[in-house]
Length: 145
Image: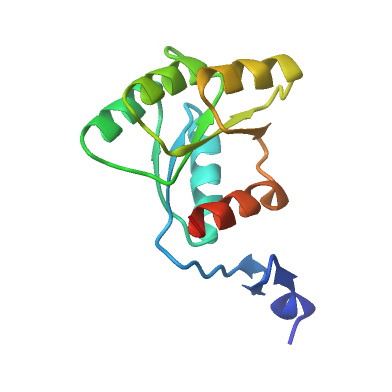
């Protein structure tokens, strides 16, 4: 058996190099990113951790989806969306009463951007290349709420 078959990641087993996560409840996420490659990578990453994930290309698309009744435990949103940017989308979601955990992601990852994101109503902020060691603890928190 390959060594990766026996690795442990936050108390969960990896299988053939891919994570296998078991959750107490069905976790859901929404990815909002106007870059198709990034959107699919982010969705694929969350899906690989057992998160039921949907993806949209813009802030208005996210608002429309949530207005139609969709709910998510986690919303991952790019800070630099074209048209309605990430912080504006977050402000509108919060004004609608959305209580989902919101994680902003950015390729720039500066202190100024972090402040803008948090002031808009975001909960977490990380660089666009999502590292499992940064977002898995957030998933565990959501799973235990």
